[in-house]
Image (cartoon, rainbow, N blue to C red; front, side):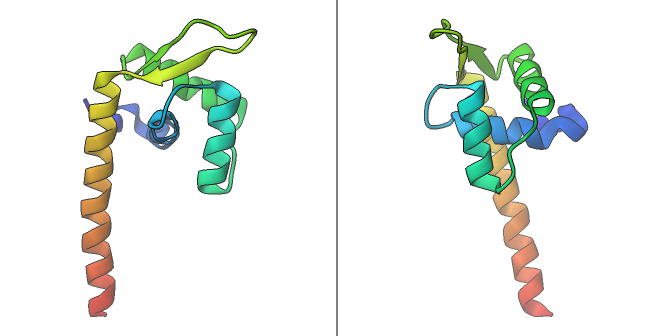
Length: 103
């Protein structure tokens, strides 16, 4: 599976997966974590839209609610997908940085 099938929604999905890589979080905690990571928190529509799409594709799953909060975690497929996406991004960044050094 590739996040590219999410089209323009692939970046929010990637950020949600990265946030969940170190353990389950509820939506607000994911939003805050992404804010720390990128300097900008996604809006609720963007965040919960990404969560819905990732859940529909089996990349994340909801856990039992805690109070009024609904935590999510990566699935095995989600972890493998995130690994592949990050390795692809690293390969592209390596080539780009190498090309910048030449000019």
